[in-house]
Length: 468
Picture 1 (cartoon, rainbow, N blue to C red):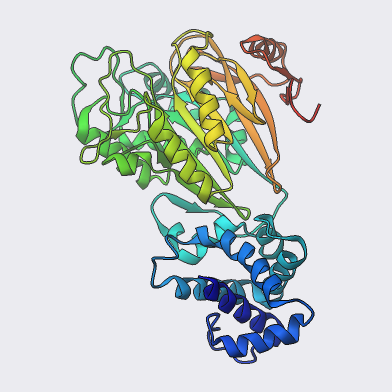
Picture 2 (picture 1 turned 90 degrees about the horizontal axis):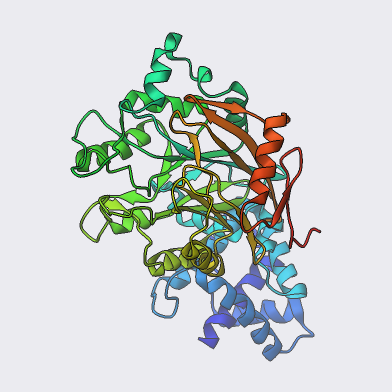
């Protein structure tokens, strides 16, 4: 293995310092003799042992790019391909800058973003073309602006057999802003990624699950309202996506695909249901994970190795494993969990315990739904937990609600805002800057564990934040 590192170092030095003149593919695994000569010419004063030690540190950090390097006979070809990809896509100066920075300051994941405009996780996805998979959306390859904005809303229901859609359909021409304030529609369209929880099936087929008290199904054409709202991503790990049986469950995912709405948390088997959805945007790779533990009497099937269903996390071990894997492959992890006591602001102890476990495993933000009302906000180990966002547009009840806005800077620092709203009589009002909005913010910041102060513009100040 030591010879492997020496050869790779010699070849990289040959590329960076000798600068091959032709356009043929560069061979990073060349003979040790030519590489050693370049090494001596370029570095000269450094001993062979120090070079080996230096590059060993670099190479070890690069090993996770590919699986089982010691057992993979094509590993050298993959490294050749990856370094050629960097050279071809970003130029000699980028590769030279990466090498020189590693040599002078040691390895850092952030150097890839600095010299190419893309994080190492994005570069790996671009090189392997895994971003072409169905659970990826490529928005922008390289860093092009100062921040990424993501909005998070709670439960939404387009069910024809429930309150919201009959109300909308009875409005003249079925205009969405008669039900959801235009300010909200503008807000969701303006952010880079807007999300809600899809609390219903989408299909023209199926029958309601027996023994289930509340079941919701929407006509496929109603999905266009997501497009009007500016929704990009919905969570499917919940207790209503399977309400009308297996056919309607599969229709739900097919229709979302048809309308360009991304999702996670459900699938044809456990592998599909547990798979994160990835966004590549502004040079960063974001992982969205969706799981559920929301039913007292479990009727929604759990996805298994051979059967469809949702990603269930009553036992957190599989979810912890998914988070840990996503942490190795992405820059920022957003975990959505459908959980909590319905119609209550009380936090169940299991929510507190497992949310901390999920953050320790690598989650950077947790967004909860299911309670149908707002629950508290916590700041744990430098990460935010929004235990429940309640309803966004779900029924006719009068409840306080709103959306969370994340501003994610290029250095992965975060800023959070809560934009208040009221759901009442099948309508959602925009309450930022109103007396009612201030009341909603006061109520939210008082909910356990009461760790926040929310300013009039919605900005959230965490009591134990390092910013204070």
